[in-house]
Length: 190
Length: 286
Image (cartoon, rainbow over the protein chains, first blue to last red):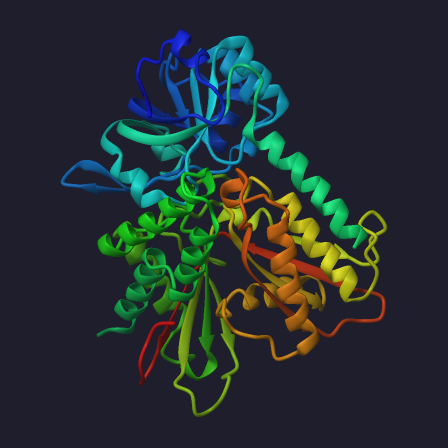
């Protein structure tokens, strides 16, 4: 299995192919609906995403003796960020977008243009993913947005993902969608 | 034990334990997929995750969802809204629930997860007077809730008329549109008829049925079986990356309708089908 570590080099990311399994280690930032709206409204980015990873995730966290502990942290559905992601990829220089369900053609194109990939994590596998978070190194917008929407900085170790959309214009979801549409047509005729 | 503590315990169990029928269905799905396939790998990950969450008593999914309590009306004096809210606040503080409630107008987080309207509590008639009164909790995440749909028949685009064939077409459409989203393999609760509000209520109520039960209505029982087979033939698979199991179950109920309306409501539930029952004066769990 390929290992990817922060900072993620553009050449390494461009070499990834859809379908490959990878293990992600190092700094990963969370950002989901509120984060993308903030970005689209012209808000400043709280951290530097260059050569970094954006994880569509709203974790369950508790504070134990003054230290944040991640209890559960799986991916959320990425499709809601379609309207914002191409521009975010362009401006931020992010290399990995991690979520579930895949994203649209415009995002796929932005991945190719700017050297980024979309990784799919296993949806709902939140206890396992939380075990990959070694440390919380920071949090932004916690007061304003709440814990689920806040931008968390995680130090992760061997976070398992699959390359679902690569920088060569290939998305794993396209083939499945094509096949299921054909079967559905046949079932409607039945 | 105080009632609030008991309810908090039910919340923790629901958040961290997958029911036996769902685990069995996932195990059967694993056996159907080829070794080394991504479908099998994903399903095995789900089972490992469920085991870890159970062992640690932590949420199996970070989206601890909308909490819907179905309370036997005989417990109205004991399982009060105030007691349920206190239990939810405690469970949130302990990290058994995510801070998951947003004021829809201001956009601010309601950190206790309790306010007017949260959690949802339904007081329901007793199934039988002999059975021990029970509280059932359903925790349904937003990703799956976003994939729920309501159709109004006839629907020309789907070729769906006002009959069970029309219902079949709606359900297949809902499964097809949910691909990639909502964390397959999912479970579908369906309501034929009703008004828009009670259609969703009944569809969600169907999600409480055990996956291995049989519908008492023979026509609906046949349709349920057929739809499981046909939905799985779509090849959408676990997490939408292809495979033989797209749904774990289809459960269909009905509600009377007025002549002008014919709604088909599909409530989509992800594989993290969190539902547990606590009985009073008898055993517990489901």
